[in-house]
Image (cartoon, rainbow, N blue to C red; front, side):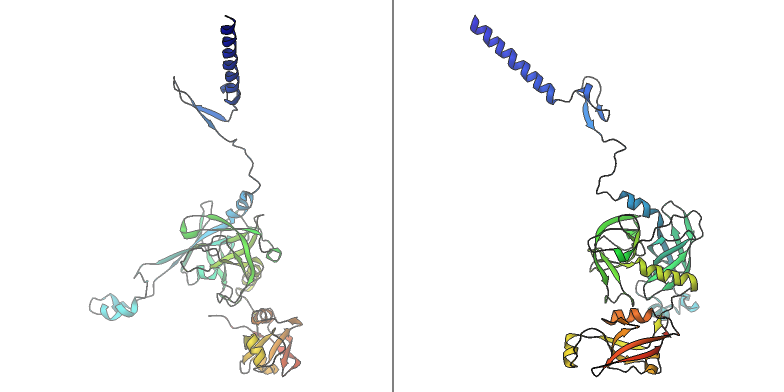
Length: 389
């Protein structure tokens, strides 16, 4: 009898222990937080779901604040180009065959208008929008669509093909405006966001880092100082914003390197410092005025330095001089090496082009050239750079 009692007591003890353990690990309905819902009615066992609070703050790695600040100022730019005017006789059945070959170019849709899309950034309450020149080039009609749904016809204030920038303007009120950042403070490795309308799917934000600064010699524009990024930039992003993690504008997305037509992680943006100076010139005078001296330049390669017996690899070789141009009149000759402009050292042809372009036409500039191992200073009357075609 004593053994049976002990067995019974042990069994009860084990059962009670299991019961308490089960209740300790099982979430009880009475103690569930308000964010937990139970689904199911009747005799079926309810399903317990966990829901986060609706006012959960963003995680430390979120860029929602930066995106929300910049997105309202990034717009879609829709352009339309009318087909080339056809000869009146091209519609006649008899004469049509004489015009079919020469009148219809590759990809021509006949009498249908050609439409394309891009992006732009509102930079002023007065309705000024920065975009790429190739977005609005030769467009007969430009429509701007804001993220809030408003639409407006835009006019071209001015373009600068040499930097691939353009300024257009709309006439709407209460426009969201982006804050201009400082591209000169950007560093490789900084997180950036690209905002635009890729492939026409709608406004999109992509994230990446700054991969490189000061990219040039890409043969995209005449004046190049690109910010390179791996933030996804695709067709339709052109003219959109590249922003920092505070939502400030760092650059205007302009081009990608791709063998497929889609993003492969190599995108290029025009720094906001360049865009700002071009925009101010266009708004004030309708065009950008740059200095010019009338020379063709060539990089100093190690091979050229060795063949000419040069002791330096910095500077720009003057390969040609425009007859009766500013440089010719000042005495600059082919074979000279331009080493400084107004006291600023010239390291390569890109820097030479930028330094000369920054000069004021009509004024005199001191330039130092190396000729037959001897440096000479020449005073050059700066001309006006011809408009790019």
